[in-house]
Image (cartoon, rainbow, N blue to C red; front, side, top):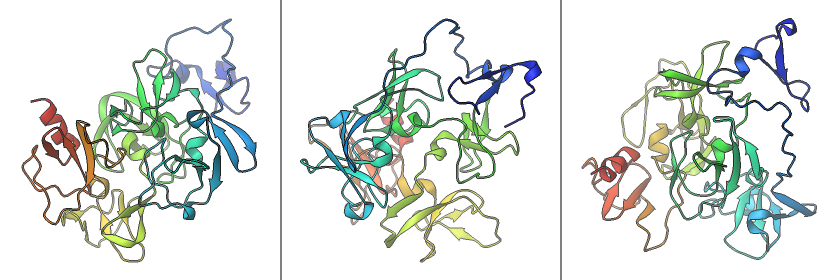
Length: 336
């Protein structure tokens, strides 16, 4: 974030008095779509997703035949109930539960997602739609997902609700002192969180911090079978001379990168070893479906048909006749 010299001109928002952008920043590649909006009226369509019936009770447009009641996270069985919108388990956060159905439950923050918005990555008009029974690839984080999604009006861009809800400036606990902004580059940049390369990232102009999209949406709190008594929390790296190791793959863990740990037990896990590649897909599914994500809780770990090694991640993908442990293995099989 830099000071604006108004003698050089800038773009400002008519509704948000504190929001302004340098002319060069507003019109750079990846930010401006090249369309002039002079004399075009702004869309004022109501994008709110629900109607308030009374305090703590709403009627949401995706489940409009029944009312939803606001509850505490402790009222939900986090091990078995997942949010209908984002497909992630309900833990200690507030959530809405259907007062009639047993299957419909959503995080409060997911209930607040607008029906229509301009996304931060592609600057396109997006609509929130149901995707509960299909497998899609998010065009921002490159994760396969189920649940609801934002789709562009031209049908080209799909975003899962996590990426679709991101706005700029982006504030993350892993980099609390400065705001982050989406950076489009023709060259790959190294993510400070995981060390992977990506060309679309969040970056900090003040200290050159880089965060790829998939790491930006990592949950702060997770459950894992290696620590059944406590939640694991996301650690944002630390400088230490101690040697860390991952209790899933039993290999060294770089403590300067992000990882999951338990403050009570000292359990430490690589990010990928914590989730695998299928975190945003609901376990189970229809028997006739060509794909199904299942827990890797076999007495003997199954052998992956993609890499011919034992599956070590907590969830695996059954695709047609194949058992697959990772996204890379899935792509290798699909490409055969």
